[in-house]
Image (cartoon, rainbow, N blue to C red; front, side):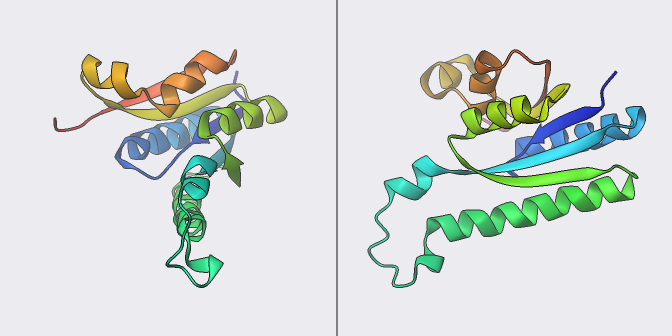
Length: 149
């Protein structure tokens, strides 16, 4: 049924449950797990970085370092489950980058995490997962994680 499962993760609390779910699902169906972390260009371009002398000390470097740690962590989790992993660090708007990658790789299923929040919060801020839901035509599993208000 699924040959290619795409997990989009930012390494946050909501991603932990999604990561475990995606690895378990890929293991149960023998799918290849594609794992993506997106360096959000809105974060890297919004800050001038005046106090940084070396560009490697700016926010992009920090996000890339965090992204490598997240991808390595999921790769290790998947290896323990015997799941083949392809990982990729993407750059751009998170939702758009995830949807484009899914289309490029012809993903059978996308897996994303989200925090369970009050409706008022969602109506004001939304989320990357909500945007991916609106942009993609592919099947998508949303793994919800409860958070303290």
